[in-house]
Amino acid sequence: MSDSVSAHAHQFDDAAQQHEASWLGMWIFLATEVMFFGGMFLGYTIYRSVNPQGFASASHHLDVWLGTINTAVLICSSFTMALAVRAAQLGQRKLVIIFLVLTVLLGSAFLAIKFTEYHVKFAEHLVPGSAFAFAGPHAAAAQLFFSLYFAMTGMHALHMIIGLGLLATLIVKSARGRFSRSYYTPVEMVGLYWHFVDIIWIFLFPLLYLVGRHAG
Amino acid sequence: MNSPHVVSIKLYATIFGALLLLTIATAGAAFVDLGGELNSIVALSIAVVKTLLVLLFFMHVRYSSRPNVGLCRRRIVLAIDHDDPDHERRAHSRDSNALIGRKPNL
Image (cartoon, rainbow over all chains, first blue to last red; front, side, top):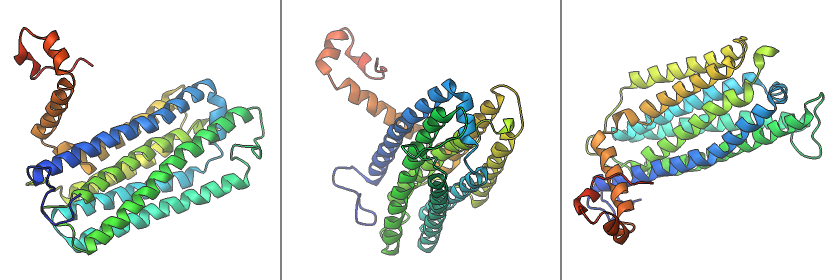
């Protein structure tokens, strides 16, 4: 990405073409991300269809309240991210920084809640492995559920951590005046990434936290 | 890029509110016995609606100009066609103009 405020890199005809290339590259990357998470979603679907009761009883050990609050926190962070991109479009540097900082704070809150949940799972011996303990007839299926739970939420959390790093560099670059009304592509692209990570969670939340809740 | 579509704060706030309401709806619906697999279907349908809202408005898919998308698609088609020009020429020697605008047979 170009360091100067409005100039484009030498391999592009103009700034518009450079922007289009970034846009296309970002969407192709997000498509590969869909395939990456898609494998885990497929694994989840297959094992849940084989062990519907085991998955339901394992899911009951997750905290619906924390899951719902975390979903709301993440949606709030997507909102502030959208407002950061909007401020960048309008060249409002201070607002860009404020909204990016808010997004970092909300993203960190999400990770903090997630950390608390993980801690409880360790304490309750629900982490797959030799210490795994699950009362009832569905212990094997429950271990499978928690393997998927930690793989999927863990990969999602890793994406959040990477996103926070990207946001931090954007804040520094914004403060140094690297972006303008005519060049704010990195802000826009990190925004796409952040919203994508939000979408992954939108599916993880019902699939992991809300299985068979109505059955008690 | 030259004139980006700036979405009003009011619209962003509306989408944000809708996403929060749908989150509460998902959590609430999970505790109601809808019978059979209907609970899963409702939960995933709400997730799809939320995804569409994020894609269309937060990710600006709704405002991506058609020519932009069309241009990108055409470039990919050309890149694939150019991958093995000799093969294409052998296969479509009768009308070389047919190469342009032809969909890749992948």
